[in-house]
Image 1 (cartoon, rainbow, N blue to C red):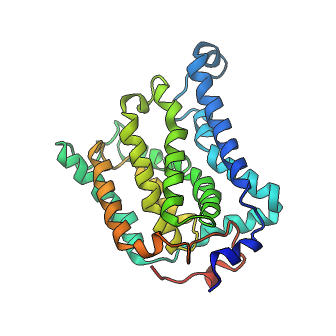
Image 2: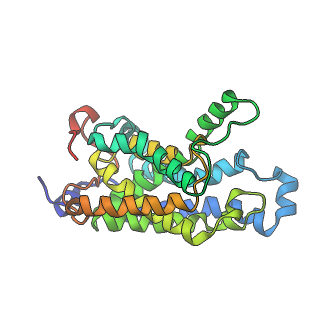
Image 3: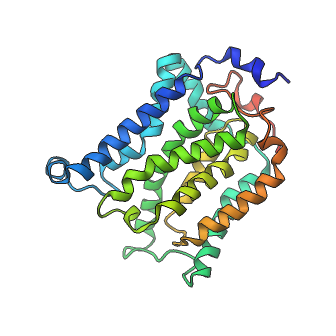
Length: 285
């Protein structure tokens, strides 16, 4: 196996592209959310009141993904973008990670809700299962789109230069700060939350998804499913217990996977895989 230092010489997208990734990400999101904070009457008169289903809210949420696509197109063109999107087909990894995404995350929310005396599942909306599944589908095209930037571009670049755990922590911190203006946005869920636990949660989640990302050899699919489960409307409100349970899970995972998390050897560093997905994967941990 080639060492990380030897692999960096063949990267089509240079590490300096990370600057563009972050600048575009913050410029799009903070300009939209910031305008609703600083000049709310003017912006509301022009575009309507902001909400979780407003097109501008979607645009702000998609900012990391939009930045990722722009970076790939700028350096590698449409063929590079096709190769980049091919990472959506990378699905093979250690089965424990699929089990954690599909079963473990729901159990975390259920346990956290139970600890605060809440239900095991969120109450259905007045329309029943139909609107609930429609909202679940909408969530698939909201937060998970961020992963085209966070895990699509930022994580591979950072893992060229630092151990995966530090790459994950840095992305988590950036992710948390990126959300900060939303806490000053009226009539949004963030106004009822405390930023510090949320920030800690972001760092925790970014570290927790890192071994999943690397086990699947740089998959975009698994981080997107991971993200989707975090905002699944069927799981109950478990704050702040979900944050602390996930922090405990992350601590256990860090100890368990310490050899790979603290070493760059074997970390995914390619933004555009050169091999076909089926040939480039193994089911290793």
